[in-house]
Image (cartoon, rainbow, N blue to C red):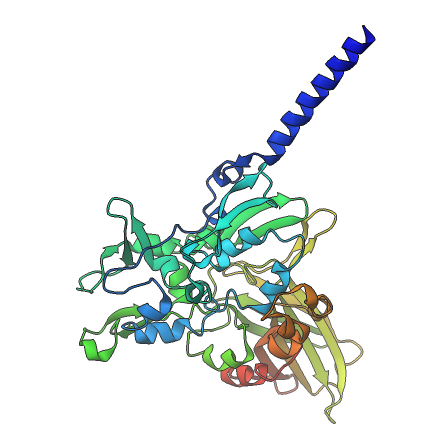
Length: 440
């Protein structure tokens, strides 16, 4: 009897273990784990485009020369080579394939195809080699085809998505302005919790929608310009086009790109609207005038550092104060936002200062707004752990302060209280200085 009972227990245990292992090992479709999430899968493999060839930015640039040259200077073109991203991607806790769905978003750019998730675990992607992998297209990161090329499932041919129409290009084209205008939200408007310490928090689209503005992402980030869509030798008419530098918060991915920021359309969302001083009290008013979303927005670790320095008649600093405008998060043991004092579109931040001990001796104030993307303490950690980063990015991560802009001065005002005189430093001058700031 005992022997039969033991056999039965072993049989039940074997079945249970087998069932458990099956469920832990069985392939689960990505759609079942992330239902309705566009970012959960790359754009399907794109075939060559008739009249163009492979859907690479380089090929598009054969005709769209000026647009291509702008794109090469953009954050999008640097989305894979971004050494902060490469450092984050190399962390053992990084679900790499998910991150890459936004940074190299087309299947042609991926060395492997994810066929499912083992047991539904996003840290266990089931991968097979991608026979249609294109290395040159991978290096283009967020390339033209990310927004402008898709597959026609009836003909199995790729076509170009345009916004204007009325032209006769050599390639198949479909006009869908709304698709192009909304495409940004697929990556830049997502709030999703992967686990207790991994949270995706990009709410720029929602912030824009809450303003009920008629503007969209394109309005500011791809400013209008009158030009031919293509090179002059093709003799096409001058039309309303858009700059394709995808200008953002004024902190480029390389120091060499500072000189391009203003040309591509950058202007600070934040402005210093007013300075008032009454005896020992000062009020400085900052207005979100130019952004139809919060400032800062996007990456929750970005913030503004507002700084004020007071100088005496000899130029010595006798007063110094700083305040942070942004989000505060606790990442461990559970990711949660603990503070948010960002400025909404059209909103104002009033900085109140007590100058009791120094008001009589201060001759000049310097007021700055600095957009911070990467804190020094964080980049120090990245440098120390750079050995886990793959080539060719490892050496640059080790010297990240020399290669990677951490922040940008986007606003500076010199104020003389006794004369009530204010001088705003031109943006062009600020960006020349930013180009030489290392590790700041």
